Amino acid sequence: MNLSIALFGITREIVGAPTLEVALQPGQSVQQLLEQLRQTYPALGELRSLAVAVNNEYAPADALLQEHDEIALIPPVSGG
Image (cartoon, rainbow, N blue to C red; front, side, top):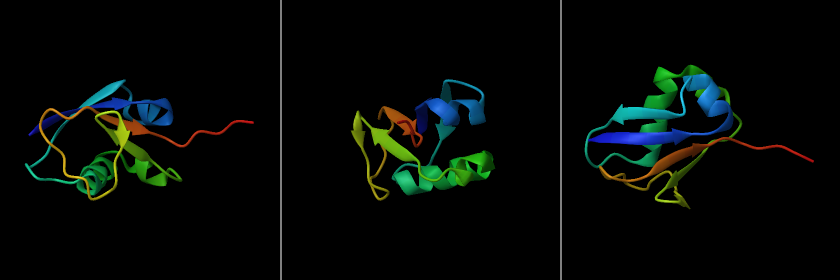
C-alpha cells in the first residue's frame, strides 16, 4: 500500500520535503512505518521523540495502517 505522510518541523528538514510517499505491505503498524523511515532517514532515529498522527489523532505504535490514512510525523517541540 502507498501512504502519504505530512512532515512538520525538523522531520521536514531531515527529509527535505513537506510530504513523503512510502510503500508498505498491508497490515503494517505505526511502529513498522517508523522503523522503515529510520532506516531510510537515520537522522529521524536521533530525535528524542516522534509522534505519529493517523487521521488527525495521535496513534499508538501498534495501530495498524490502511491505504487511505492521513499520516503526519510530529517532532518534539520546545518553547518557553
